[in-house]
Amino acid sequence: MAEENNQEVKPAGGGKGLMIALIALVVILLISVVGGGYFLYSQLNANNQNTEEVQKADAVEGGTSYKADINDLVLNLTDSRGREKLMKLSFSIRSTEPKIATIVEEYKAEIIDVVISQISARSSEELLTVGGKNLLKDELMQDINNVINTVTQSDSKIAKNNVTTILFTTFVIK
Image (cartoon, rainbow, N blue to C red; front, side, top):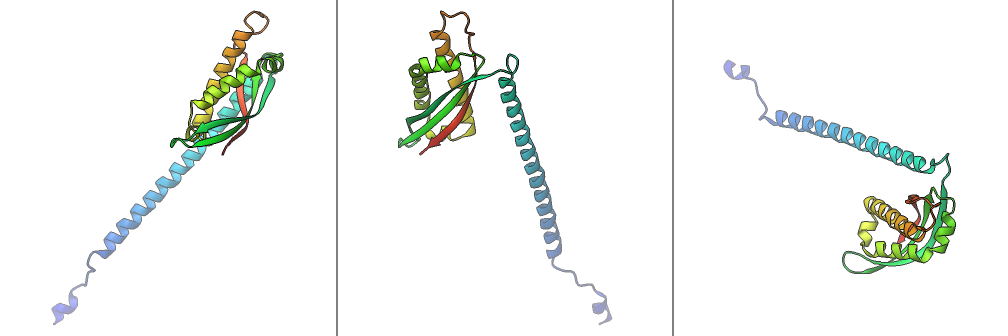
């Protein structure tokens, strides 16, 4: 009987499994916090770089940038299932050309035609993403530059590719 009292009673291994699970949970939480922190840092850094690019675009020729606005376009588009949607779009054209407002007003039909063509080539899901909006801005800028270059080719005083930025002021899809 004395030998029975000296034996230690060991648990059936439940303590080790619980400890391993807690350590794994702590490691996962640490990785999540570090990953989330890195994600936020990279997003803030990207936003700062985009802000600097816009400021650089506005700071051309001694800090002078000119603008023209296209307001309240109502456009048709479809989603990936073929359902029709409406889009209301307004944007500002930033340029190095002092006469940009006059040029845009005079050739508004050509510019709106380019916008309609670009919007029609996309689905509403694509346009609702940041990447889709940025791609649309870039392609609109190229196409509007092409229109302005074509219609003003006889005027040597107007610089080629003078549109530097497109800024959306209204972007609603319903």
